[in-house]
Length: 142
Image 1 (cartoon, rainbow, N blue to C red):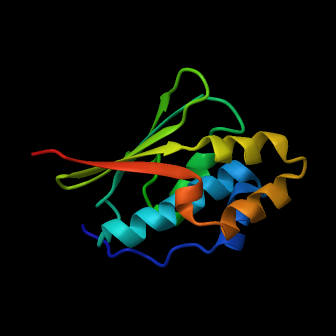
Image 2 (cartoon, helix red, strand yellow; image 1 turned 30 degrees about the vertical axis):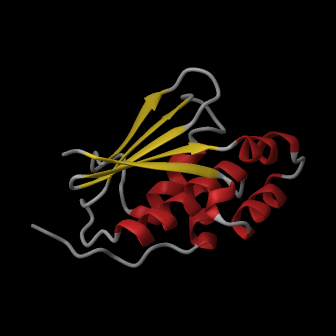
């Protein structure tokens, strides 16, 4: 059975789902919103997202932000987590033949780890353009 895409969760709903606000949740959420905007998925299975990051908090908080903004989920198997090495976070997004890779910028790292207040750091992240926090390059599966 194929389902239409439901309405995306807004950010306050995402915070409620996750349990608290924070910069990694915000980074996942804004990246997911950006991906939906540029890749225009029609169904709940159109995107396949793979996140390479440490398998520990706060890095894994990004997964909840991505789930709430893209409808790719761990349960459906179209959101995958691969344990990364070091502090690099790379997100691979696939839709059909299009592949986009996103890497977290050093500016994003600074906000995440040098800002004392998690909610303030998240607010700053949500107010800036996605390109401040994520660098992107495309690849065709062709």
